[in-house]
Length: 264
Length: 315
Image 1: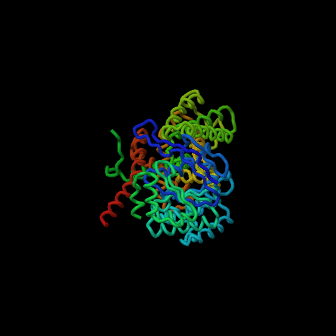
Image 2 (image 1 turned 90 degrees about the horizontal axis):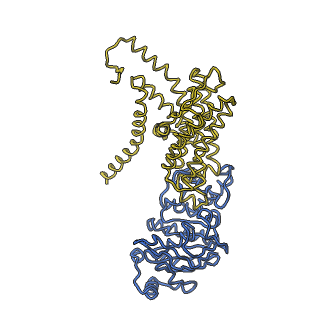
Image 3 (image 1 turned 120 degrees about the vertical axis):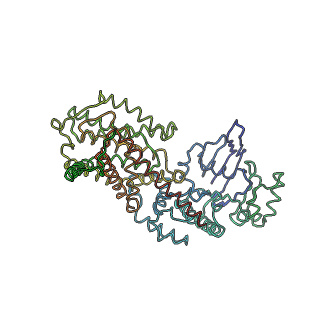
């Protein structure tokens, strides 16, 4: 469904701050794969997400979505295939627009926008039903400005927007990291349910090793812009945090450098 | 020395009444001016508020609208058709600014300044002089300051039509995509919106309205002048900000917000009339305008700062 072939990306090339963020990264996701991604600070997790989304051009390598080469497509064109949720709850929604307007904008992802009316009555019913499934009471607040919602509510709404039109790949980039633990658990639960119900292919970056083990059918660990560990199926189900830490030092030859991951 | 008709100066009651009558007589003209500039201010609202883009091209494009309308009408063109051409000329100016910004990556403010500067020469070329007069007795003008009630009626119709069209447009798929772009470009691209194209469309519509206002205003005052747009952005901003501060809490509906902007423009010209009546020179107006805008921009900022301090104290 998604394939990265030998992807390289260096930031600030030929300066003192040169940083090779992706170092010949290759990854292949099968349809229905739900992959969790962990790694230390600067391992290249978010860079990989941005490489898939097309935030900037790659130095080398290819990105294929459903067999189609999208390497040259700008981010807004790739959006037709991708659903994205960001770490910052402010990033995924338009604060000054109403809940239903945000959903209506998302509903038209991958479609040419014309001079037809921006929200149809039929959609509104659909939105209300979908919002009900979040269990946050948003179904009665269709006309509220998104800026009035809490971080958790905004993140849940972003999740809904990302999956309103079924994406070929759903990208979740530490999407619960900015939320309090209780809200984070709720948003994760919603993510799990939406992915399962729609049989989505998904990539979820997380700094929480327990979450990485508990969710999805496959886990990859990154270090220095490469994948150093790829565990799936039954083997993944038996993993513990200690296993992961050992495997990390064995594979990378260093200690896992991410306090957040160790403390949570 | 500025001659000031201050109230504390001892004067006869009769003289004062006469002077107040002067002011009241001046007000209908202010309303007409406010309505025409209100259309221009709606254009500024689209870029400044909806697109979050401070577009300075308007200082040039309002003159372009005026120049095109006057020159075409002097050449015998139907006034409605001339006005349409003025609108299109404004749109073209907006397109240039949009392309400077999106294709060539020039920062927003600088793109507008470049267009504005370039338009000075363009406007001179269009008119062939720095000023072109058009006489209401010889030409079939849509409105003129010679007949202010009629001018008010005509501009109210134009304002209403503008608001109606924009209310529809910003409710369409493209219209909402433009608003989303101004609100959160990151989210918009993630939802498949080409934010560059949306910015260009917004700038085109905005400057089209500014061109239209220029065409109307040139007829109203009976001439197009290469300097008629100087400081227009400040008047537009003043209207947007005054409208927002006074009516923002009252009006939640988009059409009403646009009406608030037009009220803001009318209020601005009323304030100017009062200031002139108090005895200031017309050349002082730019300073007054700048101060009014600075004041209204400062209020929300200072209010916010005070709120933060209060929260800190309580914590």
